[in-house]
Image (cartoon, rainbow, N blue to C red):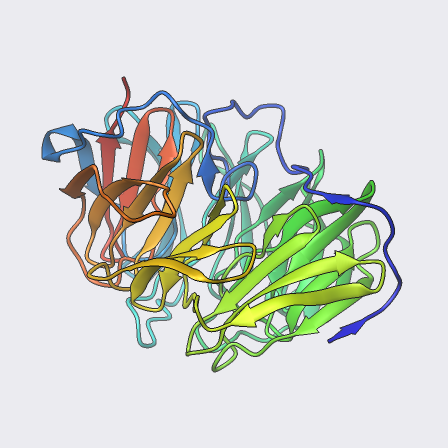
Length: 401
């Protein structure tokens, strides 16, 4: 463990990335407007989901891009015939409103390939980073290109083994973050650099803005480990070294007050850290949660997530196991504010269950999509759950009351 300039005072999580154009039920970016994977919705039909509730399905192309939702449109990306295709869909019908395509390799080493990042919607624009580091800015209304920048080439970073997969994080009114090994703070108007950090070597995580005693910070999880940066300057303030198997740190850091949680697969494990006046202090570390790809959900002092091929609940206080559930493979999950886990198995089964440390007791199940390696997080927004498979199937499940 190493650290640099000290921090002072009590820490608290700041939701710095929300745009004024985003409604409370919208899901404009990866992990949602609060960067925690938890939908704010509470009045939805969580107990009787069935095949009859699948409103529509569509094929959007090969890939691992999740869905972002703003108003009456959903956005995702896929790979078709040598091109990445960013698509806007009508949330009620699934009909394509527009497509924006650009030439791109498939990058299908040991998986189906296609886009790995999720579109980010803000300021009436849609932003998407490709596997080779190309950042596209597209008008949300028309699908027409505003500008693009080849970030990997411009900032001299190298693609990791499975190419870039981190998403754009909105920050404040005019900036955005991306982790490409170098953490980049970019101007939203043209993608120019506000600052760039030193090179921590690229992995597959998405950075998170937060605050400590009114000091604006960034938590990133590149190959080198958990890095804390000054949001105004990009200066690295603390680093907790962490090696996730073959340089795979894929999850988004979870932040709760002055507590941070990270995890990696390949039998690496997890750790809870505290940000103190001396830097990052290890609270506990074990192998009870080994997140290969899907980030955990922290809900009421408990972590819910996929420990390699099994779903688990851990105490956030001490990392002890509360329960283990098998048969869902290397799935993924999100949650709702009213205490429901929304789980997508790696074979495309959607499962709803209470977020309960006493046990996993599903109240609804439906085969939403059919494929293997369904590692794409489901999204609950505006009374609909969006489930995506890597073969391109996208299903919209109507759960509105």
